[in-house]
Image 1 (spheres, one colour):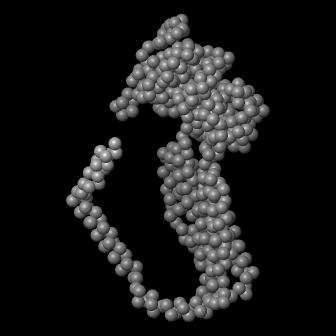
Image 2 (tube, one colour; image 1 turned 180 degrees about the vertical axis):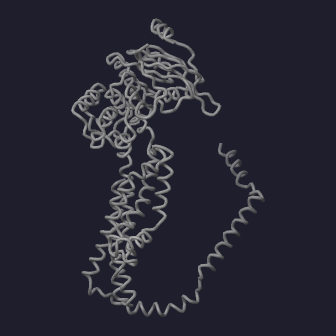
Length: 270
Length: 244
């Protein structure tokens, strides 16, 4: 009984692709290759210079061992500062993101006239890196972790709002309609029927953003916005490679621990 | 008619497909009217246009003396309090308990802070508890909605409509997702409540035998039109025809 089916399938598989489709595919492949070649050139990729630089790198690597943990208390304090910045920054970001995600989700936006400005605002916040925000805030509020907190808050507000809005848009419409039919206002519907269902997704997204920002904010110190990045920059400037190695190991330990913790918590949520 | 539910020449098309072609009907308090028709006949569109979950192209809807058509925002929400609804897919908030889902029936009247804090008044809690009791689920009160069986979920949805204390109950294919025994139990419950609470009930179904068994009146629907009254209570249908 499967014989006719098989032969039908064979005839489909055996049919050659039309010439036009093949030509289009070849043209696309060529265009891609050309773009890649141009990119290699523009990016100034030069294997020769990498070879020249290798001995220098090896020299630094040799000087880096053993890592210099003599200032471990300062370094752990700075690492803690990075974590604190990310935690407070993401929490501020979440507070900004909550109204923004409700306005920026198609199914909860009260009107077209609020949806588009909200989307524009969150795309802007998301499009500008916390590093760039921090650079501006260092100039505005001075050096130190507070500038980093503000940078993280603004950038992560955009990212959290976008991911939260996506979670809201995948929520089932039925329970929301049922709640609306009880005569509830839009806000009551959101509070009572929407938030309980999206809460696990919201929490998971928040944890991910927290973890991501701890990783990302290790560099904020480079622009003077506090945290362990500050120590990293100082040590590189002073060519103290053993201290650089110690800092990198601390960052690695911190980021790995947080990654594992966050992944474990998110697994428990689902 | 100053009580119950009434529609006048309700119409809706999607593109050039007419889903509703001038549907007029009336349901009195204490009466269970079934709209019977195959899928695609416009039953769900009728349900959605009465509730304004979908905007009809034309026509009028009255609950008692109050017009539902033409209202917007808070005024629409206010009149929706008078319309309890039961959906085919139950539409409970899955992660809330049965009792919390029944309390949703009080969302229209409860102050915002109580809704936000999840702290309903004693009177509302008493209403919700009574509603759960009348659908026979008081023992499942603190069970999460998504752990209940289909039949139980639909009874919670009915209790939600009861807690709302509306005068009208609309049910769109309330038993289409249920096994035969649960379906019978749910329809029996709805008929009982029609009598005891004096609700005006409009229920869409696609199974003729269930319609025959539970309805006071059956309205047949085909291609967006009501085909006339196949009623079992001639007096009531004459009254309706006079009203129209």
